[in-house]
Image (cartoon, rainbow, N blue to C red; front, side, top):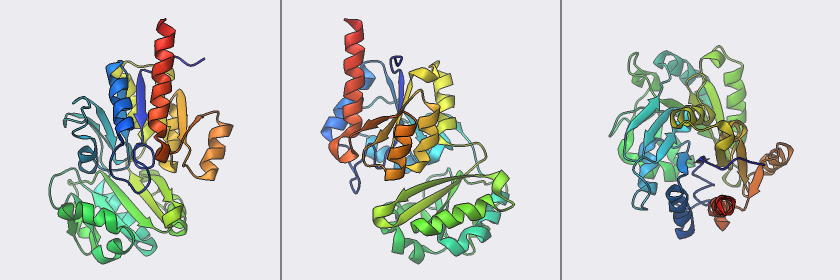
Length: 293
């Protein structure tokens, strides 16, 4: 028997947002607002950076203090911009990763600063070839620096790094990092989109993940782990679902992840294209109401 949910952390792409869409559905918005009105803290936990997340959530009537776990856990802020927690990847580590990962695909580093140079990339043409939508959406924040190491100055550390390429390339890149001298100095978190043969390997400060950020948030709110629900659809959500007392895997997740959900007794939600998050939150609210009767 699960305890009532007091905190729910929800992934964005493929979870809150259906594949290839860039807006929340009315049903999802209604469910998020209803959960907040019922006293549940709704947090968004995403690999996106904060400034790439906020525009998708604004204008929907969500609370200003809605927590945002962004950059896969490296930054925690509220929707209104209040800082809660954050950490950085040392520039010395980032420089070492440049040379290691350059052969596998596009490498990008994210900084916690507004405007151009928030994102730094070495080869914009290469990036545009595989992640064209991302490039167009973030063009005003991207600075091209060649070699990329020149952008990584000691004392001006990035929040995170990102390598992107095909699924096979990023699996090889992950193994390269884990077998290198930098393995103990960063975390690797992989996200895959097989239908597009696209994968992202996020490079984070040691110990940082969506799970670590969710733990910080739960402790700050005084919420027991068993009262935390996490909902996701990809590899970078697994540690968060494992940490939460109540894990939920989306129906559009890859088959391997669906099998993992069964083995680990996680709830399985309908796909994001069928408002899976809304369905889960509506069930949570129904159980909450029934318990009060």
